[in-house]
Image 1: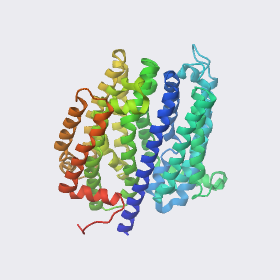
Image 2: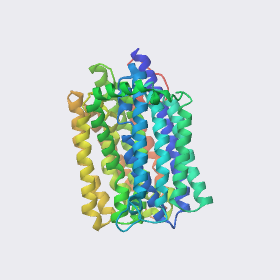
Image 3: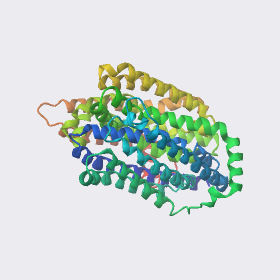
Image 4: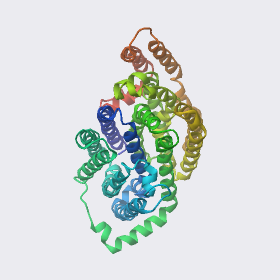
Length: 498
């Protein structure tokens, strides 16, 4: 039974990784096209980014964490699925009313609250797209939570890939044909969500009776009262996490300007989003496979995940930070070379995030989501305070201070994860830090390549393939456990029973 679960987990992780790589590739190409089309209209890109980020901050409220309860209590899937559908209908309707109110309630100096938030009068009406997007997302989540509990990440990944294809390339087409405005990009965003929703429901039939049947409301009340502490703490944690991650764009947009927000958004796209997609791929599968395991299995899986992410994801962060100018030029063109210093600063805390984020669901597994909530609250408050304090010094100063603060807090989070594991944290520190000499050597070689005289910024990035190959050979030769995990993720069998 355990072997079958692990086999399904590796298969699910492969699908999520494939979907993440595909989604990110689409994002790079599609957004590169959009950025080139908007090369002289940074304000439009900044306004669109602010709309999307504000929208994503509200997403955790939709399921009110009942989707996480469904995964944790998957043996009683039908009852929890019915309760989740009702909760999504209630919260989705409330958020739609909230968006509508933001368009009508007056605000000093602007036509409405939404108008004041977006600032430019030509883009405020794009907020209207948030209403159908909330409806489609709520419907989609009712099915995707069931697929997650069943480890059917194949369907989820294909749906997300199609969503990205339509969102990014549809957005480029909308800009090219309909004009350079935020509402055209939001229309493509909605179209991508509609496709993903339709695709996931190929495997999970839509049941309107789950929402309309009166007796189902009693199920919701009983389930919610039983898990309300978990639901409220988890929802607050996820919401604050989104706020802490996404609020820099609208804050920088408001305090520094649209061009600075666009630079930050490009920098985040180049280093933060790829890493978070990779660690999220592991973390999304880790949570359902951690549930219901023995202490020995839980700690063994946690240790293997930390070692593997340290071996293979930390070098990705180092490479992205080292070759920020080249990646910025490839993605967005020379107009966004000003984003390169931001990429390097973000790498300071992204290494810890890459290593320990995949096992962050331990607070939910241990039924202690308040631990994650307190940490996320501290992280969010620190970010907001740093942005406000350093905004007069410019966007580089803001990102540098924010990265240092985040790095300190990630070290604290790693210690809290050790406490949740109820195991000596030295094992988990060593699982990551044993690779530190290799990271330092890689960083030194990358720095040397970047400073070769009379060389185009793209060439050092291409030459970096040689030290990366040497690093990979060392992992293969001297770190068999981490290499075996990579082989299993690629679908290959073990070479030995060990």
